[in-house]
Each structure stands twice: as structure tokens, then as C-alpha cells.
Image (tube, rainbow over all chains, first blue to last red; front, side, top):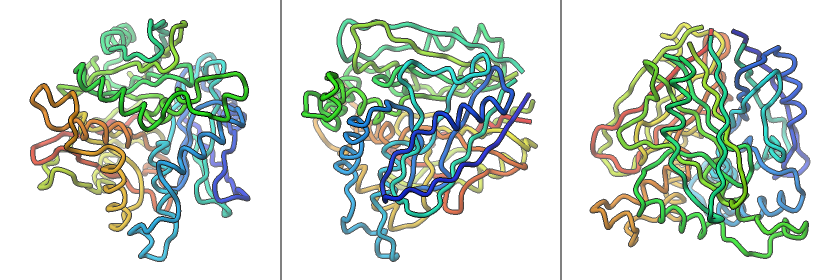
Length: 137
Length: 137
Length: 137
């Protein structure tokens, strides 16, 4: 059994941003030497998510607006009484579900034609970490 | 360590449909010979989800209406400028979270009394694939 | 390869409740002897979730109100024609996504500074089970 771990760091320029990270996950799978198994990818923060969907800029904007509609920023959240202003970022992270697991077959991510891995940042402009854990044989 | 992979294909008659797939996942677990481990089940598409919940037809209709309310179809999404008309299917897939992991104990899915595995299709009427990856010993 | 399984039981006093369970998951990881791997944590019910976020009481109340807004209780759901009254609890479980996977590095949960594991109960006041499956080497 092989287990391989990597950490990525992202510092987005905007508070909310979507970063395509399939190449980094593929590279981690290759480095692991795992032929058959699973890749687990997760932010190490609670105001960000890793998800799988389309790498199409219009859709990414649709996702951004949809998240803002269902988990709006700037509201009078109780969490803000602690001095924080990012309750919406926590809710957006929950809505998109914060982590992802991916299948590995014959040494590669076994994804469909349009499946791409994204890091979704909801409270950026500071360094944030993502963990990749590859497990298999 | 054992790793077993299977692919299922679904072509639903309606654009949106919910297919009960616990028997297929159980069959894959049995075939794998894994006694203790995890089963990973995911669509290979970004307009579908695999989730765990109740096999009760009224609730399934409630889920369908709820998804349509929170991620409505037919809206003027940016994604539709590419010629697509299925932005809502992407959002529904994100809302339900696209993949699932399940525990295996003593050679069987270790689920509670009412837990059932479903394939949720949001843009059907064409062949779509699901991957099952069983991992353990 | 090591696989370790534990079951926890919760009986919350209120119908909806959030229980911090990081210590129990850490204890299961320690007992497993796994140094590198994954911990899978899931309710064995379809009216509860396990999720990762902040252990801050204000935010937890924000999450509770947000879930109630997006998946309201007491509505005239089809599921209630079966005699049930908890359709909202099913929708809340789907919204928060019902299970979680966590990374293990050097024998411990490899979480960021603020990441905590929670059991979210949406239809409590009766004994409910959670399964922890630790897998690795």
C-alpha cells in the first residue's frame, strides 16, 4: 500500500476566486506511484472548498452568483459579533461541500471528459493551504 | 490490499431522474472480495450526483422540487451563451454534492436501516457513466 | 494495511443540535494505529450529517438559521403523507452533505488550525449512530 501527501498554497488576489487545480492533483497522483486507488483533496480552511465541475468561465460566474444568492455576504450574522466578517464564506464552503475524493485507475485520475477539479476561495487575499492525500497500490 | 473498479451506465428517459443503485453497489462490493474498507461511487459527469438518502417516492419528489427551487432551470445563465442550456443541472449537481463514499464491514455495505444509494440525473436522455471503486482488504 | 471501525451513539435533547466530535474521531485514529491514511465519518441515518467547520457558537447558530431558511421545517411536503413529519431533516442532511473524509498524517488528523468535526442532528431526541472507518498503514 502506498500513501503520498502533498500541500499546495494559494493566495488569491480577490476575496472570492476559483482556481483550476486538476494539473496539480494529476502531478501528485503521478508522484505517488499509485496505479489503483483514491485521491483525497481538501482545503485546510473552513472558508474554502474543493469541488469537481466544468472549466467554463461563464458557468464559473454562474456558480459565484448562485453561491452569493444562497449564502449572501455582508449580512448581520452572529459570527460577526466576534469581530469576524466572513460568516458567508463559511456558509459557501458548506454549500459547495468542503472536500472531494477522486478515483485513480492505471496511474491516472479516472475522470469523465468534462470533470475538472477546482479550489474555491471565499475569503482569500492571504495564503491558504490545500492537502492532497493519495492512497492505493 | 484489494482495489476493484466498475462502471455503470444510465440513460434516463426524463431530463431529471432518480435511480436507486444500492443493489449495483452491493454487487460491486461482493465482487471485490473486500471485507473491510470503503466504496467510492461517483458520476463521471458534472450534471449528475450520487447521494445517500431515503427510498420513499414522496420524499424523492420533495427533493426534486427543492433542487428546482434552489437551482432553477431555464434562467438566463452565462453558461448558456456557449450554446448550452443546462447550467441548472451543474448547480443541482453541486448542491447535492457529486460523489459519495460508503463504509464496508464484514464484506457488506455498512449502512443504517434507511440509507440507500441514489444516482441523481439532472441532464439525462443520453448515456451517462458512474464509477465504483472499492478499496480495502 | 490497517482498517479500524468504531460506532458512536448520540441522543440529542433538541430536535436539531450540533455536537463537536473531533475528540472522538482523534481517539479512533489513535486506536487504529494508522500513521498515514484516511478517516471516514458518517451518520448511519438520513436525517443527520457530519461536516467540518468552525467551533464558534455564533457561527453554529448562523448555520442553523441558514439551514432552516433553505430547507424549512413544517411545510406541506409529500413525504409527510406517509405519516412522517421530518422531510426538512432529509433536505438539511443533503444540503450539508451527509458524510466526511479526513486526512491522517503521522498518526493524527491532518486538519488546519480551525477545522473541527461536527455531528449535525436534524431529527434527534432518539439514539442515532455514527460510523468511523479508519484506513491506512
